[in-house]
Length: 217
Image (tube, rainbow, N blue to C red):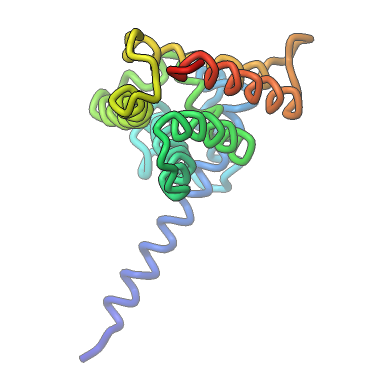
C-alpha cells in the first residue's frame, strides 16, 4: 500500500506549521517594538517573507494573530509554572514562593512571551474580535492564578499560613505585585530596572511574603 498521500500530507502540514511560526515570530518582534495597533499586516508579511494573503489564511485578523501569540506565550508560562510541581515541595507556602520564582524565570527566559501577555493590559482592545479565544485565554490565566490560591488554602489548612487573610484578595495582590515589579524591567525611561535589580527586588518580596504569611511570623 502506497504511503505517498500520507507523506505528502505530512510535508504539507510541516510547511504550514513553518509558515505559521514565521508569521508569529515576525509579529511578535513588531508587536514588542511598536505595539499591536501600530503594526500592519503588510509589515508582518514582509518580515515573515510571505504574502499578505498567507497571513490571513493562517490567522483571520491581526487580533487573531495577536491572540495566537498570547496562547503561545501561555504555553511557555504553563511550562514554567509546572516546574514548581516537579520540585515536589511538601510545604504549601514554599510552593507559593516557588511559583513567584518560576514566574520570574519565565520572564527572564522568555521576555517576548511575557510581553505578549502584558500587552493585553497595555492594549486591552487588541483581541476583541475573537471572543472565544479571549475566553479561553482568560480560563488559562485563571487556572494559573488559581493554582497559587489553592496552595495558599492548603497552607492555611495545614496550619502553616495565617488563617485571618482573604485568600482571593491575597492571590490577586500577589499576582498584581509580581506582574507590576516585572513590568518595571520593560519601561523605557529612567524608572526601568535591569534584570539583576529585578531579581533582587523579587527576592526581597519573597522574604517579606514568607515572614508575613507564616503562622509563627
